[in-house]
Image (cartoon, rainbow, N blue to C red):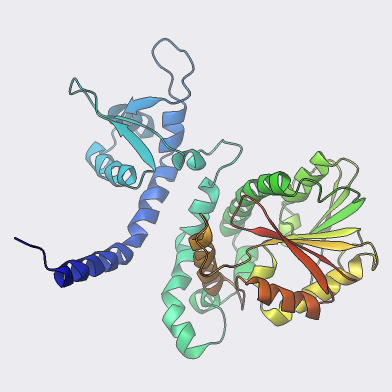
Length: 362
């Protein structure tokens, strides 16, 4: 029977809606895999002869035996079936009819807890019920405006909530730290000479200081400052060449330095708040030789790059979690920078969802 094009088009549309309706199932299956450390179990497997294996493949029964004394392997089978379909894990079916063997893919390698570069802590953070709740307030925020969706859900903004909840504060710091490592490596790859000639650098909103520590490690001549709220720097580890400074970027007490560095900070705030931050940053650097290095998304709504979809989703994360925050296009960045006292700038692409916006006070 010949297919009716209209029926086929309608069916494809219906399939899309079903897919997006249950999009959360992908996140929950991923979260399950991270919590059970399935990628780590596969990665740590050694064959019977004990020789290292760069691409181990193991049976589901072996995975299950490492999870719990008596796990429900039927549930695990069904979850892994979806994750294989999503190309998170690979599966090999032996020709002799033996147990299917599961392995890692380029995607699941990002779920390894002990890897130098891992997104596992960020995945756990973003899928915590506390951070998921604000997404249910989108329609209310559209109709009413007002405070951010996070505050609608919890009565506090995300920063105050984290300061009062040690568990969330740790998850937040761990998630930001893992993201920082990923983006920092991309910075060193795509911004090779950007720190040349810098004698001192302050990371404004630097969290626990991981990013500035990596910069100082790569450029030992730089004197580093990690600047963030008191409850954040209170848990920051000691890093060689880095001084932790507690303060508030809105109060103008940013330590003086040759260069201000800000990574994933500006997108959390409204335009008016960003202008305040920029003006305070401008006061902290030399007028003639200073510069500000902003690592943030430069949105391309119609872009077809690998991470352009991710950028659009991150803009919705700002609706959920930030008070007036948003991802911005280059035109929007230009306007902010000019009003904040930085008339010159350039955008530098790096291998990440963010870009570098390098701006100068004159």
